Amino acid sequence: MKELQELSRSLLADGQVNVVIGWEQGPTGARPVFVTKPEDADRLIFDQRCVHNLAAYLSPRRPNVGKLGKAAIVAKPCDAKAVAGLIRESQIKREDVVVIGVRCGGVLADPASKEALSAETVSERCPGCESREPTLADHVLGDMPPPPPGERRRDARIDELEAMPPAERWAFWQAEFERCVRCNACRQVCPLCTCDRCVTEKTQPLWIESSAHSRGVFAWQLTRAQHHAGRCADCGECDRVCPVDIPLGLLNREVARIVERRFGFEMTDDPAAAEPIGAFRMEDEQEFIR
Amino acid sequence: MTKAITKEALTGLVAELTAAGVRVIAPAKAADGGTDYRAIFTLADAILGGEMPRRSLRAVFQPPTEAVFGWERKGTGIELTPAAAASQPQVVLGARPCDAAGVNVLDKVMGWDYKDDMWFARREATTIISLACAEMAPTCFCDKIGLSADATVGADVLLRPAGEGYTAEALTAKGEAFVSGHARWFSDEPVTADPAPPSREAFPLDKIEEWLEGHFEDALWADLGLRCLGCGACTSICPTCHCFDIVDETDGTAAGTRRRNWDTCQTGLFTVHTSGHNPRADQASRCRQRILHKFEIYPKRFEAVLCTGCGRCVQACPAGVIVPEILDSIAQRANGGAA
Image (cartoon, rainbow over all chains, first blue to last red; front, side):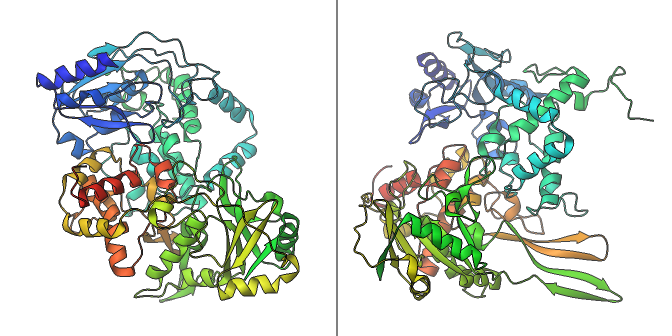
């Protein structure tokens, strides 16, 4: 923590950056903070409650943050994948951001939790994660922690879903989507939802109905998931924000597994890697083109 | 009129209501284990006094999506079919006092310059039986907004936990009619309600309103605009947020439905003009709008704050934007503090 505060203080004092995007202790738990003065660097924290993917604040869709000037961002390994995604997709330039990487052994599901990190309290996405430190980083802080506790519950759940007959799987998602209120919070928090105009907002022609009936919800949720194929950083923010607790992480992870199987691509924090959705390879399977 | 009702009698009452075709809505377990206001068929399905239902009671009176009318092209004309009136008699059992209060607040805007038929058809067909909270969650702040764990606003009947059963206080003519219409389940035996959790001092809402009036431009908004991701999760679970959008959706080429859907002031699309100009172009101005609407604009017009302190927004915010913290900070500024 001290290391993080001192580094941030010096980055701000030397004028290398104008703002450090990190976490602070809020009234109910850890939360994002924007430190612009060296003397405020003591507010920065990093611990297992720092769940949020702060990369969302680097997106051009957050001009309020952009106006503060050059940013340093505190990033866990999974967050760094989102930063790399923004660079790959030309949303930000590598030289315009200082990445303060933090070594990570998993985070809690709830940033307001006061409990210790355990198999019960850990975020769904963490067990099985092998990234301990980001490679996309100008500075890497903290000691190397042990791997996150717990089993890969989510992958086990996906195995179960994949094993279901299609009608049963359909019924599962139907029951989950029944609660969707089409608030679009899943899109808003996503660091890689960067379209100026989202397809669900296009009305001429109307591609996706905005109503929360099953037709509109399925069209929206399936389009959202597919649009993230090979792009999703699996940070789980859409899952966490959903006000009606739809397990969007399951859907994203399923799509990521399909991409992995078919294109041999796993989301990475290498900004130069070719994303399957944006790259052409002769050896890709093309059996659907006749 | 205060009576008592045992859990056993409440079970019988629910069975009687459902048998008579009355829809009973109560906090109940959803398919995934969460709690939501849902139709129940036996009292055993209700979760009375458990965790906060995910969606507020607003969804019962104004669903996330609802048809306004259908249209069909007939020859050279168009035939309109109004949506069926939603007036099946229903009872909400175990409503949170903050949720019942929210519905009451919304009556003011729904019956203002235009009487919203769909809202009032459901309101008139519904009896709200709320249940006083036995404890307050760390995110609850109804007391700080001038309500309490056993607030009566908006309820027709208020139940208070009393040992193994409840006291039942009829608060409105509709509530009295309900209790006397189902008199055999209620007893006159005097029962003492368990004490409700104590209330803390309320925010100085008048002073907050006054401060907001004079601080359309303030550094506070810029700060809020940084942290807020504009996801609108707060507005979609709020018992008092009520903004909606009207859309036309087609079924084929000759017919379609006009629908009313929830909308949120927290995204740019909400206010963008057809010219392309957006008066609330950034997140700071959208955050300001939300706070002003709740604590200045609405009180000025309707003499009630557009917030009941349910704390769902505190739980829902992925970025730690906390309304009671904002109100505290405004109150400090209003008192001349540095905040």
